[in-house]
Image (tube, rainbow, N blue to C red):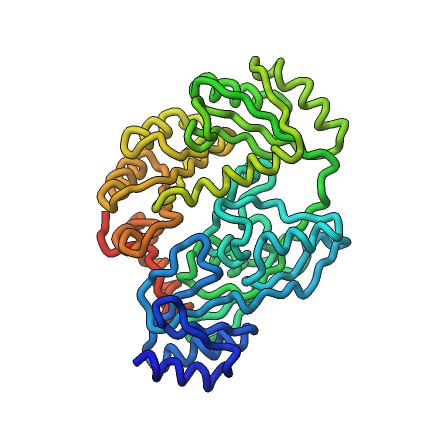
Length: 405
């Protein structure tokens, strides 16, 4: 069957637009939204399942399908407008490449997702994976002004805005952020930019976890406004103790003032990292999320961070943990079975703490789903949305999972 599929796709996209993946599956590599739509229409007509891929540096490329649809060919940056603080970027552009282009304009995209710097913008948006900068700069969804996506039946839909302002009505583009490709394939984004900060300083301190959390609360209660305030487990920090890291961005005078007040407000001694060590520190923290088979994200309230961390350590292990001391987001990486994830999810749900499976092999994603069982009424809404944007269910995505909790 794969030869017939390969032949049909080659006829549709030409020689440049089709290849084979490592397992021999036909891989479509379209270069336009129209070509993506054509592949989706053909798949719907033929009853093919599609696996959506970027560069396969975050989610493993193992979802069952007859066709792989890779967006790596959509790697253009149509426009960068420093005056409007907006850039238009295709989904296959890597974060690393985008950063280089924005540097030339003195601009930056204020996101620092887990994983490698060669992750695509499409992957970051589809999985909604924010890093420590979510505290001061907002989650991924706050940086997406609008964009274009393709539905499972081949419609091309554009939503949102091209300027930094509120969008009237419901922005259907936001539905795609963190949807793991279950509601469509994002092909192009209008993203919000910021001018590069004059000063970008990282300071760290180590110690007992509970003492560091007390210090973090003191920092937040003071008038300091860190861009990031992240608590790292010993394994995550590659050391013998927990580490609290703070990142300060802004005018030189304001950042220097915050540094001078930091020790007094927190009661701790801080080490200021040189610029080259600062970059390496956050890069290694981001890459550490790839050190295990499974990555989970829990959304706790900051006031309950202690108890939620205790829960994660008890049910899984201390392992690789990164926790936002200011927003309560916890990211855990390691090895976990579907039963362990189900159990932790049930306990977390009782405390109204959502648990998202960010990455794992397909057998775990299929068993647990990215989001697990929905609350009463939510499942029906999600099902209607999926049928609206993927009526034939051609996208191979496990949102809820086959084993309900």
